[in-house]
Length: 300
Image 1 (cartoon, rainbow, N blue to C red):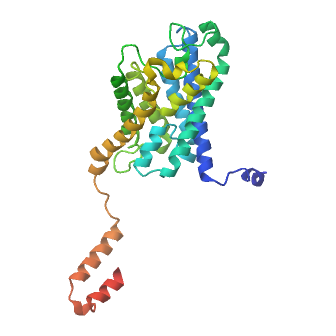
Image 2 (image 1 turned 30 degrees about the vertical axis):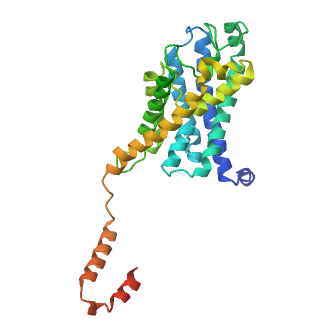
């Protein structure tokens, strides 16, 4: 039986990793969208805004424990892009990872809609809209507050994603204060919770292009129509583009202010002895070793 099960393992590492990114983002978004649907349709009687923030954070933690060993559990195109910039992930994985993440978010939104279909229809009166007191599009994608300008909303998303990457990219840095591997998922979840609790009033703290684009595409196809893209003066591009700028910026800030300033790791004792021996040998007269050419061919 074990041998037969092993034959189910896919040979392509990239396909396995894309499956993990799909499943991880699916789990993340199913937690988040389901919580948003419960709070929205119950008119805050079965949860509050904090419930949504906490559910997304639990989704991050669960998805990371589930898929970290396969793909690293990026769950976010901005994270994948940042790791490509840092040369921790090959550039050839950027597009497949991002497509898998968007697809996972789309499918999760569809399942959450099916679970809460009756509640959504009762709440909205059967009219799926983006505007008004009974709008339900915000259950899935993010939208700006009425007072918010385009420039401020763009800055909001850049800063939120910058903070996310600045905080998580150092968790495995052994020269600093690395987190235990088994505790990285709850630490990342806590960081996401902090950002959601402090930077979501303006436009929902998407800080993740897949988290916004996948559900937005679902609402486009599920009855909300093109209004999900045209509303608020075609605002939809902000939570897609801004995190892709903020993530690499946060990574670069970490490099400049932290990684490049950390102490250089010392060479092992045996390596230091070897270097010292060679250095002392070079200082000795040439007659002890022969010509300089012989020395070069022997050690280099």
